Amino acid sequence: MTDVLVPFDEVIEKFDPALGLEIHVELNTNTKMFCGCPATFGGEPNTQVCPTCLGLPGAMPVVNGKAVESAIRIGLALNCEIAEWCRFARKNYFYPDMPKNFQTSQYDEPIAFEGYLDVEVEGETFRIEIERAHMEEDTGKSSHVGGSDGRIHGADYSLVDYNRAGIPLIEIVTKPILGTGDKAPLVAKAYVSAIRDLIVALGVSDARMDQGSIRADVNLSLAPKGSDVLGTRSETKNVNSLRSVERAVRFEMSRHAGILGAGGFVLQETRHFHENDGSTSSGREKSDAEDYRYFPEPDLVPVAPSREWVEELRATLPENPAAKRARLQADYGFSDLEMRDVWAAGALGLIEETVAQGTAPQSARKWWVAELLRRANDAGVELAEVGVTPQQVAEVQALVDAKTINDKIARQVFDGLIAGEGTPEQIIEKRGLALVSDDGPLLAAIDDALAAQPDVADKIRGGNMGAIGAIIGAVMKATRGQADAARVRELVLEKLS
Figure 1 (tube, one colour):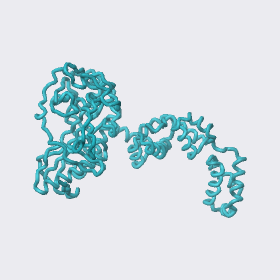
Figure 2 (cartoon, rainbow, N blue to C red):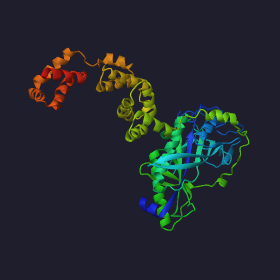
Figure 3 (tube, rainbow, N blue to C red):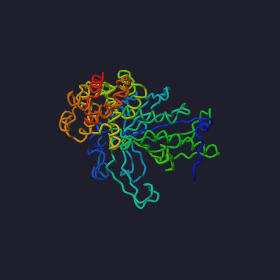
Figure 4 (cartoon, one colour):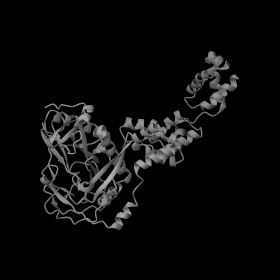
């Protein structure tokens, strides 16, 4: 059945949206949540498993202390209260990627609760209230083979990799987010982005959405305009990019409005998001909490963090990413557009490290955003993985400032750095890239250029300074870009004056 979609403007005229976001964060602990298996991404299927994370009879879990520490730090960063006493529960349901047939999670006694996070969208600040942030374990990963879209329907068979089963997770759950109106899709995107930035700043996860180490479940409901009763919600599962979060909210708003406008009823269900067209499709009917038959986990003792420990962890919190971004923008003198590009590229931390090495902020921005980002995109890697360090960028810019090389040559030096050819100085020497600073070769190249273009020489003598670019260009070509353009200009003017 094809969904009837209502234009977004019409949705806003007739309905008020309510959002709810659940963000799952995989922690970067060395081992899993309840056993000693490696908690690393990748690996051959089913090689990072043991009796505990496979749910074999008699295997006993032990809580990962580092995961508890990370959970507390996340809770504090989200302005949450930290429980003096909390415990784990068993969330019972059958699914092939759950080898125990239950998930060890927290239910009504989470480690962190009653927090908030402010996000800004188009100059307006929205306070997102956090209901809780609780600890749990991840599931295994199912792969459906033989179908056209990688889903179980139409597949010939399914495979399960339990390497991910037991990876420590923090689930951050909001209260209903109301009053966003037509900004609902942007507010959802901004909130997930702010959570990701916070997680990266805390250093508790790499927060790679493309690898599933941070995933968002997007809950959406509509109510008639002015109603104080929330509508029936749908939950779009495992949305794995910021753009997709925005698109999922927008699509679900239009889909709900189509159902309600035709007099139908929205089904409370999970939905799958499709990256190719931004649509969602039905998954399974959504269960309520009582359907999971939660009960306290009998094999784990309660967690009771001391107040002294909590305060020690509070002292380790980094500067809030949004506040830091505003501070650095003011310090560096970046325009809003420049800062937007820097932030979108994930370059702010790299620029900060480069500036700390003595490079001017605008020079650091130029290399990271205009040059190295292109190379990272071409290679299909993150900017930090492009193969150049902030110290090396600072060294290259210092050589430019010293007029040892120019910007054009600097790009060749970056080629050498990415290829592993040594330090910037070694690359310049090996490739013969140093600027030609001796006036003798420059004067010879200038004579050749003037002789080849007498009409240009006449224009310069007549006061047309714009024409000098043709001579400089010819000299640069003759010296393979290694002439100092400023010095060439001086010599040309001296010769023709």
